[in-house]
Image (cartoon, rainbow, N blue to C red; front, side, top):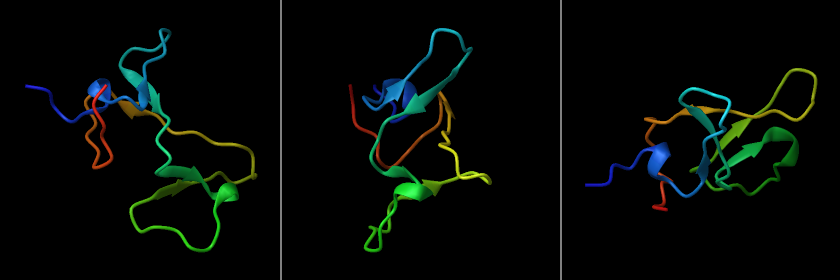
Length: 70
């Protein structure tokens, strides 16, 4: 059985220098500096205080509605 968690998702990459966290490349997670007006309601937007490019990480066992199998 394949669980719908990050470590089994095609969008998730596990850097070799970290324990159990990785980054997601899904287009459903966008930096606030890149957003427009007509956005779908299933997005996560993120930002930072100084306006520099930001990122987010997830644990390998995190689950997501935008999961797609590898």
